[in-house]
Image 1 (cartoon, rainbow, N blue to C red):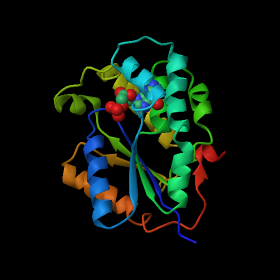
Image 2: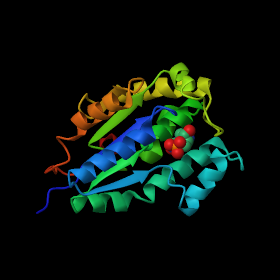
Image 3: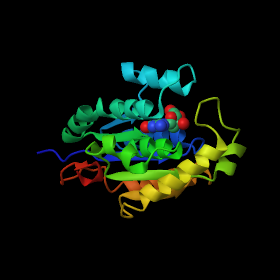
Image 4: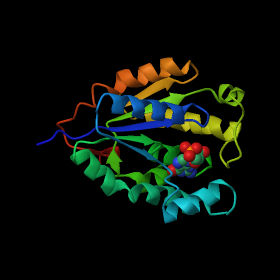
Amino acid sequence: MVNRGAFIVIEGLDRSGKTTQVATLHTRLEAERIPVKLLKFPDRTTAIGSMIDSYLRSQSELDDRAIHLLFSANRWELATTIEQLLAQGTTVVCDRYAFSGVAFSTAKGLPLDWCRSPEVSLPGPDITLFLDIAPEKARERGGYGEERYEKEELQRKVRSIFSEIAAEFDQKAWVTIDAGRAREAVAEDIWNSVSPLVTGLTYPMQRLWGR
Ligand code: DGP
């Protein structure tokens, strides 16, 4: 029996340095010879992902609930792959996951419980690292880009919903990291949190929100 891989999710506000940190973690895991697969949501390469991409770039309009369900379906279309990778002993590092789904749609005004429902029972992360940065500091990092959600007011709401979600998890399962610091310090905190998990886990994969 091989030990299963760890499921590591990295969440964060826009301009928190998340993409750089995900890449740094991936490189370090490879250097340590840990079998690892990097995933990113939304996965814009699938048919559903291309609808999401067009929406995010404001090239199409969709009802708030419809786009929410597409983001969720985009995760479900990879759920079996995640499960198989973990079972074969590969660590999965995921850039954004269901928590972004809940935080962004709730920030737009949909009820949190409604937003969470389609995400229930997805493969559950063993650890979620939330890269936290004050929206005004994020803005100083060169401003938000062109995409639909990259606006300070919305990011502020997203941040507060992330902290509501965090409160439901224990401190080992959800780690908030101050992403306003130097990137080396952030990378070190991430490594210290994940390194005990990546040598393989003996307990079964979790499901989101325990169901
Ligand atoms: P990224 O590729 O990580 O920059 O994400 C693109 C944007 O989409 C970003 O503003 C966050 C947002 N986003 C990511 N996942 C979801 C989701 O599941 N639902 C919603 N509504 N927005 C999401």
